[in-house]
Length: 325
Image (cartoon, rainbow, N blue to C red; front, side, top):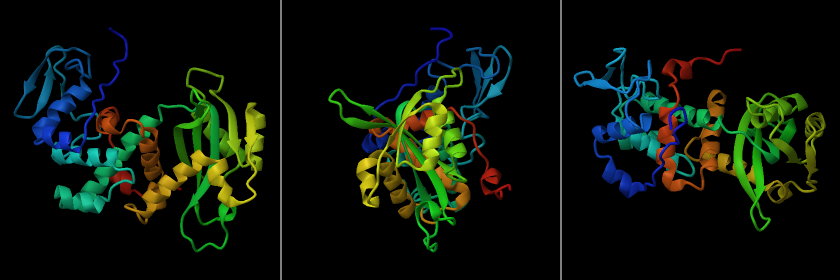
């Protein structure tokens, strides 16, 4: 109906089906058009649905306002010189690989001469993943814990490891009809510290819809660190505190955050070794994105393509610029 948001169409697809369906960049262009305009062309300037195609420049011209656009403008593919077929292969592999893909390996497979080109492509896709997940909130019981990433030269471990990046991981937990706990949606962030102010800010961002005042989160489960106690008191959350007499118990008592931590470490120690601090959040977002869609493996490609169409791009200069202090 007019005025209602159209739900994206996610189709099941596996490797063999992908190879059969996408043999040329024209094949990719047809799906990209349908993904961007599922009910036919709609002018991004005035919303009119009638157009003429300028085939020599691969543009679509609105017959009402004369605005010209392409299927890639306003998406992560904006101004790309890389064939869409190579983009689609990278999206498929990043969507379906449980532990991520080696960018150097993909460079060889896709025959892309410049490593920086495919490195930037992958980061554009990760931006689409992060932007898509930013739309979703956490609710109910949220399990939350920290982890640390960085060099192993520090003698201190855990919260005293000053040389390492601090990661805050939060996972919604729900119960099925048999009363068994299941992990729901997850988020992970780099934080300057594990203070109550930092954790409270993160939870407020994750659990308060833009148009509401009441948080969706009503309880948290933690290891009882003092910052969590303060946050639970401030927001009125029920606080389920688990006692970790042995660090090895964390997998049993805080299972879902530690499952996500294990997933992240498998990625960081596998295809993405030596992740610079500047881009660590981007890789965390990639891990969370796949975790959050683990039940829709066969729809993974179409879901990620939709995310890539629904967000703007990031430039090579942005990605390679020094961190502002």
